[in-house]
Length: 292
Image (cartoon, rainbow, N blue to C red; front, top):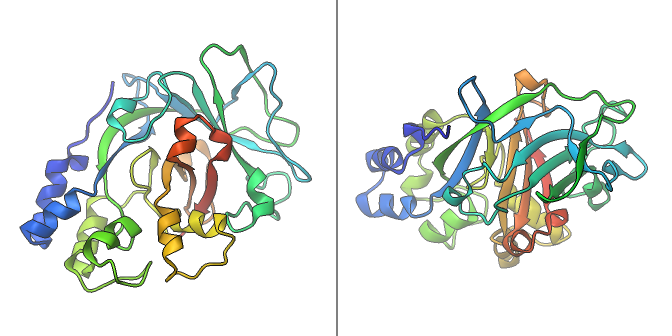
């Protein structure tokens, strides 16, 4: 059963926007919303579209993902593309098959080796595997030294998602000449509007597609900086252009019921270029994480 929550509807967001923005600005802001699939713990009557934790069903010919020199990655989540409400999202996900998410979470080394977007040598510490529907699979137990996370079945609901006002796509509409990543002189950056957005939805949550709910600066900016080698300044137009190439594939929040805590109540993010997504090159997905 797909839950369509009223508080994530376009009508609810329009009402909020019109309380703080002019009608013209509100319509421009609403035009920047993107549909995303929000994931939450499934109750008894809910249809599960995936799960956090447990053991992954890997192709019988595949090895468990490993970060060379550090060890195997922990299994974070699986998403069943066949039952995900993908037509409601704005990213081109497969209509069948399973997405598996792995991350080196520090169990093996006490958190010494961090997986960071800006450290190219750590990129192998997070992985997305796509398992086609016709592949022969078998459930695989966690390698020695890794404790699997408790299983939490996930259900889905379709919501409209908004980017932070300093996101490049929003800045381009309301203040294209403003410094990247900073507030600017427009009502969408007013404290009143920001507070209203926070009260409207203060949860990062688990999500497929749509605008990422970044804990800190827009995650697209972090990925853009990383792929450009950290050698461009924030006033370089190449950074904003590169950030626009990336879309959220998935985000997984800290989750008490799954014993998942990413830093200080943080979240894990996987992003991918649209052309790589269209060609099913999930191995090219990029990872970052943020915490408060």
